[in-house]
Figure (cartoon, rainbow, N blue to C red):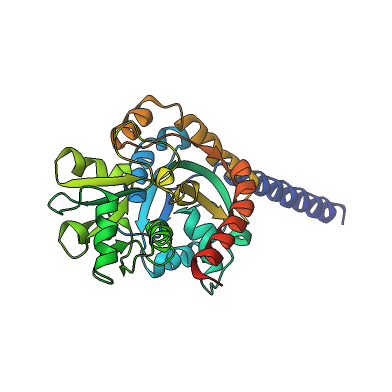
Amino acid sequence: MFQQLNVKRAASFMGALLLGAATAVGSVQADDYPNKPITIIIPFGAGGSHDMNARVFTSIIPQYLGQAMIVKLMPGASGQKGTATAVKAKPDGYTLLFTHNFVDQLQPHTENLSYNPLKDFKSVVMLNDSAPLLWVKADKPWKSLKEMLDYGKANPGKLKFSNSGKWGASFTAGAMIFTKAGVDAKFLPYKGGGPSKRAVLAGDADFTFGRPSTVMGGVKAGKVRVLAVGGLTPMKILPGVPVLNDMGYGGSGNIMQRILLAQKGVPAVRMKKLQDAFAKLQNDKTYKKLLKSLGENRNMIMGPEYDKLRASQSQKYLKLVKGLTGS
């Protein structure tokens, strides 16, 4: 009887010991994030500025994160296809969304979405921001924005504007100009800035908006002509090119912010590991050099701070949409 009792006690002790060991191993594994590659969903097509910027940061971030980041392009429905896929992913930090403020904060005011970006996502980081460049193919006759708009006024519906999809970054910038100028242009939506750019180069559209990373190569090669820049100030890389804001077409409303989002349920410790890695990336010499070569800035904002901006900017975009649509 005594022997049986000792056996039971020993078995109970071993069971508790094994349970404790398993719990400890589980805790170590949970803190070992990331222990496999992280998927970055980009809800736009190949060749756009998000694709270009992602190539830069994903090539360097592994040395600060310990794992690779793999880009998955998922264009469609003006960014909705990729965003909806990211929303449904397991909130474990292994599937992130690389998008921008117009899809994240403006689109909910114009589309009946199956998700709510402000409620379903938290910001990892705002990587940088970028003003739009309004450009045409170099063989077009217009030497200035005024000349192009005058053509549009004289030929209603003939000026063809390729853009990244309804209420996307380039769409919104164009809508602001045409509404103000009273020009009836033909909007041609594409699955991102890359396809939109190719449409202009192929002669299927007259003009579009791009970002320095996708436009400056064409400028240097003499293939494209930039007629105006967005934002509030001139660009050093484009001396002499006028600013839309100075011409009365607004500036701050057309700035695109590139943001990396995670599902709301991702553990705080994993969010911190991601943010710590990007904070180190910000000061990386190679990262600085590559972004400069693209003509892009390093105006990084960490997630907690940027999340505060998302709500306030969303309300500003609501007013913008009402002003453009008259609703």
